[in-house]
Image (tube, rainbow, N blue to C red):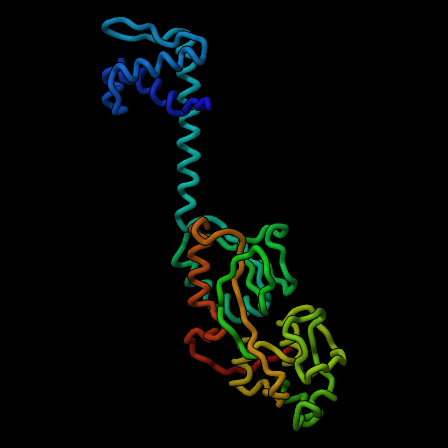
Length: 310
């Protein structure tokens, strides 16, 4: 089997011979004997079909072809060095990250933790695409997607962000108009706000319950605001209504215990963790610790204040 020539290595050796002005001094830099360097140059000339160097007992000189090849070799080696340096820079936490996330996660988790991350990594920039629709990372061009629910089998790699209970909540204004439901059957007979697409978490009142929500919205944050406005109850991730429940702006309603669920959250991405750019690796590590939905309060002091849903 014919061995392919090491063109970059031959170019580098040729440039070194020209720089050092001879085989002996070039050999000491390259870690080769003078005869080995001479043979390497002869092999290069034979392959190119041109004489590059005029040799004498005291010195070497470039031929016109050698001068032309030397100029091109310098340019090519500079390009190789630049490419290696550019790729090597990917090991540093720098560059732009495109995150695809639900509006609820952005509003109730990411908004609280992002300032500290950006301060820690000043060379990282972030694009945030807010949507509750399932994203195709390759088509969308996103680096990381943050999604709720069980993950189907796929080529994506996932980092857990914890689990959150799903709770049914209503505003005091709605309860004042409609009365407090006494159980899940009572609640099932009332109007409610739901998602405008099929959710992996399934039924939220009774097993096999199929009646549609009277009002449907395409994202969880929109649902939360309608519930706060007193439109109807809804089932939402606990971390998105924790503050409102604690401050009395929302009330957790009784449901069938069999309908209670924990909803997992994940940060998903394409590729192997060992080959990720540093900017993605440090963000995933940060989310896995600070961006968990089972600790989304983040140790921040909870302050209640007057809020107007409109």
